[in-house]
Image 1 (cartoon, helix red, strand yellow):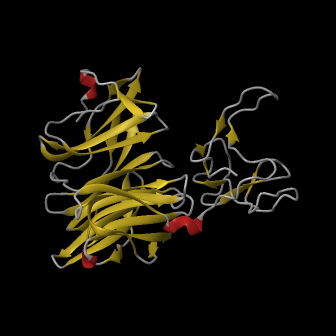
Image 2 (image 1 turned 120 degrees about the vertical axis):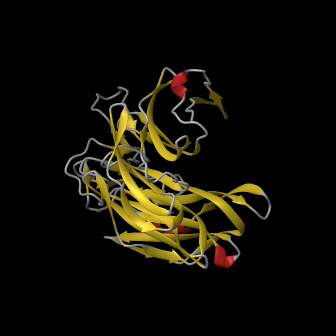
Length: 365
């Protein structure tokens, strides 16, 4: 497993390919690679399933220094008695600065472990089981609920391949799970994306009962329960290998998948979440740009944190609450009172608290 560095230049990427042994994260005949970035430590986590030892899951931290990879120490995230993590995923909890690993073992039982970066190695907590006989695992994280969402195909029998999701909460150095919440009958492939604007989760899957079409459904977390909306087809062709990500510029989710009907890779923007938009209309007095990171005198340069970022310079925030600009004090408030001079349309939140000190900045006014 290799980690290479690329620099974006114009409309292309320039790869800084080297023969440095540090580019090798480890393993031989590796597969099913994943990569996460941890901004708190400016570190990448590269993870993979090894061919030797067969089926063992490993994770290795790495930093980029002068366009070169500086590798840490690899550690196993799947325990040695669970040697065939053929379907797996990992997700970053940026509130508690931990990573959840979710995977199958050789008997298709489903487990999770919790990883914590310490220096140049990831320490792995105890393994906990959340289901049996599963496939097609994907995951996401909700900072408002402080829970991982783990989605998979529950292989109850060959004719009942239900789409299911569980909520995973951190307890010490391990994970605890809710009961499973089903959203569809007979599915293959899953992808899970958290939408920070609406605090909802979008699940994508291949609907076997409907010609294997690409289908999405929106879920809302309430305590340890997931409430689902109505399924919506995003591809009227058979699909496999579905992946998704949130498009914060347009408050929607983008799916990429293999179109088996036409033998090609397709993408589609799923805008079912547009009804949950949080940003106000453009124009108006004193347009909001972001949050300054320091106090400077008039006319001096200042660094401004823009929307889609988390500002950790706040205090005493209430997790999950929306925050507005206070037109009286110039600070932040949970009160949505409209300034008398405002002429820009709806007065909406500028951020949502993801921790007591972290404010996720929403789209600017």
